[in-house]
Structure formats: structure tokens, C-alpha cells
Image (cartoon, rainbow over all chains, first blue to last red; front, side, top):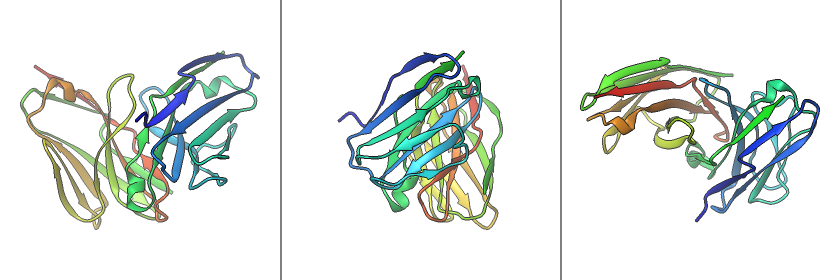
Length: 114
Length: 110
């Protein structure tokens, strides 16, 4: 049982390049999330999804797009990367209702934008 | 919106008890959660309080007072492996989004 898997684990981009982070979960969770974490700080929600085909904006959505075409996958895209997007990105998933307070996180994807 | 306050750092000795406080201001509330994160690792779920009172899970306990918009995480019989960052998080009214505090870095010394 893999839980939540993120790819890639590390990536270096040049300013203006685009990329997609992939998140896959095998727990049949309805909800999925993308957070970013900057050094010494908490997690800030970028986008989230409450089900297949739905997405919504979180606290810091600018510069990112997401898609949830399949229940088990949640993709985070950067169309034109900027140095301010250098961060560690965590994907998470959860059940609905009170279970939504219990997030299962992936191992993280460390992105550096030069 | 939601905002959470917790101390940035706490230091304690092995075997001791430590309490990490969290106060929150929210436009809606759907429970208070606690997560642990070791350096370089992913956050992992520790506990969840939907109602007022104390929840105990082994050496860890979590408390919530909704009238005071306050909660805490209590760690007993501290071990070196408890050195990590601890985050409180509140759920929104719809129960589909968690907002995290800035985290408390706990250092356990021998």
C-alpha cells in the first residue's frame, strides 16, 4: 500500500520554464490537496479538489494550475516558473467529513527555480 | 479567513513533559488537528479534536477549548526522537480545507 506518491522528488528549473508535479494516491480518498512549504514556515494551501473533475483555489493559487481528471491523481502545473516558486511541495489526500482533518501526505517534491 | 498562532520554538529535556499551545481565529471551524514533521520528512497526523476536552493517544494528548479558540498538544515522557516540528491546523466550515499554523520546533535535549 503506497499511500500518496509524488513525482518527481527533485527538480531544478530556469525562470520561465514550465513543469508538472504528479500526485497519485491509492486509498480511494475523495479529497486531494497541494501545499507548499518554505524554510521555517508552515504549509500553505495552493489548490485542492473535493472530487474527480473538481478543483478549487486555496490560500496561494497564483502562478499554479491543477487538474483532477482521475480520482487517484492530482496534477500541479507551473506554466512559467519564477524564483518565488522555489519551495517544497507536498501533496495530501483525505476522506470526506471529519476525516478531512486527517491528511496523508506524500514525501514532497523539492523545486528550485533559478 | 483562518489564522493560527503557536510558539516558534520549545526546548525540553528527555523524560520531561512539554505543552505546545495553539490559538486560532477562524471564520468557520471544523476541528483542530496536530501534525508532526521531522526535518526533511513529510507531515504525519498525530491527533484531532472536534469537541472540547482532552484526547489521549499514547504519550501524546491534545486539548481543545472552542470557547477560547485555544488548543494544546501535550507530549509526555519526551524522547530524543520527538525532536521535530509540530503544526496545529484548523478545518473550515465546509470540512474540506485545512489551514496550518507556522509550526513549533521542539528540541529535546539529553
